[in-house]
Image 1 (cartoon, helix red, strand yellow):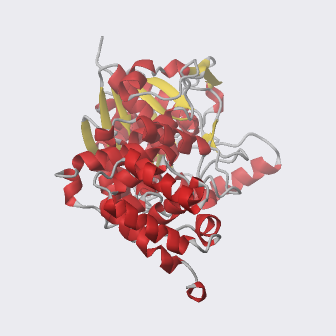
Image 2: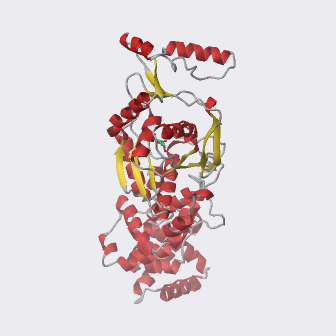
Image 3: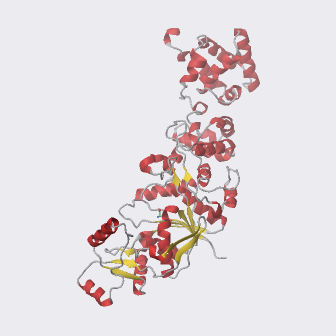
Length: 496
Ligand code: GLU
């Protein structure tokens, strides 16, 4: 069997968005599954819209996702000579022709066809010009484009799509399309095929929005005497209103960098992406890298469009709830040793990383992550909801402050008392701290919950979290005592 060779060829005219990332992932998975190669090609022929900034963003996005390439990046514009040569070859072999029709004339014919509700398309005026006529027009200096000569055949033109099955249309439906502009520049449609032939691409996995190109490209493969690759057109990603997702209508939420910047775990995000248009045939939702490579098949790519469930109206879900839920599952179950470097990065970004967490306090750092991760949605939560574990400048949420602290004025005395008793403890462990807190509650004839809830609020800033006595031990005696002792400042000055 020949080696499978796949490619991801983004046009660098914007950032890497969800749809592009999913295409890259499917290609990567299939290359891995078949032991093949994946090639990165930057399709920068549209020089007016291509930017270096976009190339940088796309490369960063792919790197963040962990999508690696075996070859490239190649740049399409480096092969312009080859693209032109291919057009010249088709011309020389009579498979393409020079078209001198003026734009105004073509536009007028189009208008007329529209008005008459006739089929639109090039009427082949120049297709059968004699060599003498062509030479005359050229001598006159008339500009021309080069058009591909769609064969006059009665049968059907088509290909077997791995996702959609046989795709066909009649030859008559395909226009003699332009392959070289009057300024001598080759068209994208041709460049794409020439590059895929040169790169010996065996499988093309791309969005269904490219299907109109594919029909014409099938003809180019034949004309250039190249074997047809396998095509797999994947469904588009739509929003809940069935419109195509785009930056214009949805903003940054469709960009891969949005997920990186919001603290998503890269593989968890891939796991979300793969399910946006592919199904394993059972209800498994979480896949390790190896499991996914094993399970992934082109045949299980869905035929119908995928829905990106972006609920703008619900602030609780700042993106598709499924993306969040998958990320949460990874947060809860990943090996701490794998999670720790990601948490480190977030803490570094927030300026609350301590080098000791990677050295003398490494064990503490790991057990803290293990203790607090259960309620978190993203990595960012380690620095926000979990800030009190790593820094003293955490914010105390207003809701628990009102409910658990300010409601009981005496807490401004009780909490410092508790601090004093904790300070006396020789062994600041779960049993001892719990015993002391319960004893004090008994003495004060209050429910232990009053002290416990107040402690949680003051020490962590949060309403909910892991078991309070686990928290105390993790945060440590010195900080706990200091925070409880300082609780008085939370009360309005007048009540002091
Ligand atoms: N450059 C095209 C795009 O970014 C990809 C074309 C292809 O996959 O053949 O949409």
